[in-house]
Image (cartoon, rainbow, N blue to C red):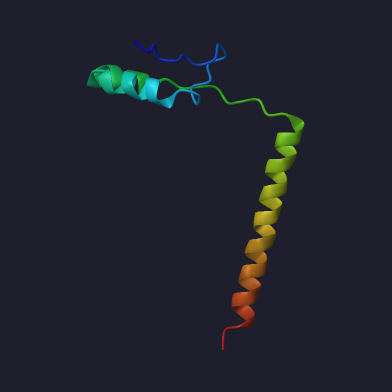
Length: 76
């Protein structure tokens, strides 16, 4: 009989989504509500991750500006 795999010790649940889906499906309604009410702290991002996210924001604003300009120019 094959035993279910367990996630890494650091709490990474993405490695075994099937295992946790079975656990969530077996919870009673009040247990499920209590589990969903539990909040998790924000993740501390590295400097390179913060830079990447702000770069994507700037790129998005730039592309929205181009889109608005193209629509404005091509309105008959």
